[in-house]
Amino acid sequence: MILAMNLCFRTIPTTCTTVKQQKDPPHQLNPVIPTKTKACECFDLHKELIPYEKAWSWQKQIVKQKKSLLQEHEDCPDTLIVLQHNPVYTMGTGSSENYLNFDVKEAPFDVYRTERGGEVTYHGPGQLVMYPIINLRNHKMDLHWYLRTLEEVVIRVLSSTFSIKASRIEGLTGVWFGNQKLAAIGIRVSKWITYHGLALNVTTDLTPFSWIVPCGLRHRQVGSIKGLLQEYQSSTQYAEAIKPFPDDYQLIDISYKSLIKEFSEVFNLEIHQKAITVPEFWREDHYPDWRA
Image 1: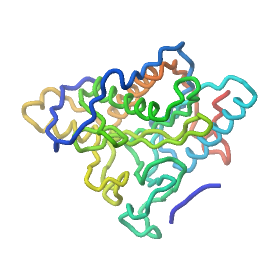
Image 2: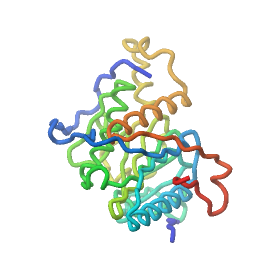
Image 3: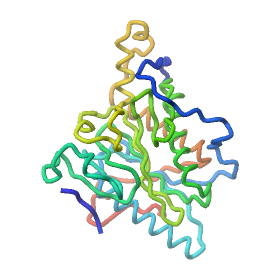
Image 4: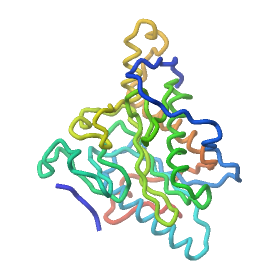
């Protein structure tokens, strides 16, 4: 049933199916904000599996608190949550059940219909999820700009850390390598406060994606960082360049550190790590206080 709530690697050559890719002239996107650096509190749960419902409620609580601060004309700093999820499918506000390749009553995992944009997607172990809860008044009050800037964060991570030359595809949201979607993006903005965010496949088991039509795109594929690196490690020409091959935990850590670095630079934010204990997180109706 659908649930709802009240490292440096050698360049990998592009040998995937050729697709039309968007070329972004320099004047189209200037993701580094030319303003004074602002603080951003970061809750680091990137090694933890957090149930989707818990993280979703937490985001909405933070958004509510930030709205209250704005109404009182108080400072509204930015927040970033990074985590992994237990296996789950999520759908956007207007998502169609036609993109589910199973009977909803016999779904392999929980299915949540949320208030974000976009169609159905999968979250699970090995996928890093970033939830920026930021006040676009402090950046740029433009949703197109915000989506393209989230994409820019991932494109820089893949290029600078893994030498994967990913890109955008014209008319689609997300980050791609050839015909493979490596990162999905779905957001909600309320009174210019953002929530939901992006999901980057690092070491993800891609099998659950085959039980849906990811993002409603029938003729596209889903890929991962690990999959691309393994593909080219098997090539004699590149095998020596990426040895020793990092294990899953290392890939997750490397990707997380790069995401934080690029997010900080692209949004011109100074990241402040917030201490959080998982036992505290699981207390009934309790969520870490981003203001503490």
